[in-house]
Length: 408
Image (cartoon, rainbow, N blue to C red; front, side, top):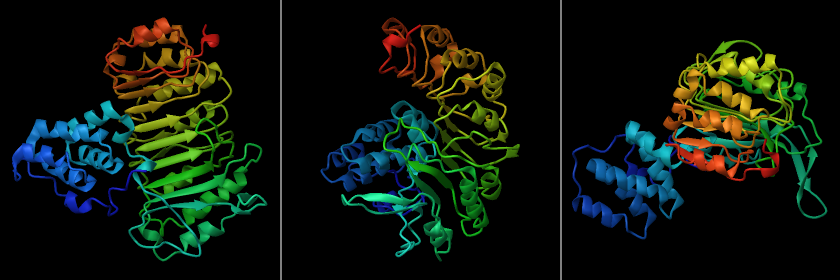
């Protein structure tokens, strides 16, 4: 995972803290010297050279962009951080073209460590922790097996640790079992515990609650209770990621949250209910929204909530919209291309749905789609001929693995 910008890391010494490099500064050897250092076999030397590259305006800027494909993951991450933190709007646009998710505040921005109650929080600079909400022990085959599906002992020990106030990101994990439901009452117990510890967790910026799925396409069946109290109790939260079924309620009343930038909800069931409750949230800073659909369709009344979401009034800064795995994708697209929000988006992901040539035609004829950086329509039901037409758009198109036998 990417490192937390606030956590000391391997290349912080070459970064020089938070002071940006001088615009008109020079370095030994000039731009040619920078290029030579970028050929070094040492990843640390190449990362150091990127700092100096930014002093040479456009030519140096291009060198940092090229470093996004460096052979070292650490140099790639370092280049990404420079573009995000030091290169302004041009840096953001470059990242949108290269890998849109690198532009946004994500759970992956923190490097997580597993919390072990017998060890505790090892130091104040370890700012992100995974905490298991279940107990397991080795089975006869030597592998770990779950023996208790809901246990908060580790979380209690974590909350009572003397250094918990330094933690900036927390992931609460349940085991994945498609036949086991973690009911709303148990979820409520977890949420109440977190909220009661809000003063201890006063620096929390990112929170994940969900299960350990063996494959990214498998969806969570955990039951979720009302999460309004999380938003009320953690006003500085920037990332909230959830796995779980929003069958009854998710955000049951209207609320304003000033700082939330990223909201991700993945569920196995129909997510029209989740859409309706997202409309209870006024999130002026939200940039990234991902809502995975489920197995069911939705009625005309429920579809009104999509139109409310697409109006953009509640999410004025939304730039990345991901609605994978929804049914009736053609209808969603028809509303989306006529909405104000399409003009603000940098990335639109409507993958793994039921989009046909009819819906794709609406995308093709929408001028605002050409202003996107990325359009992801992979794993839908579009003909090769339509994919070819869409490839002429001025945005990056991802259209892998269309299902021929599902085309209409």
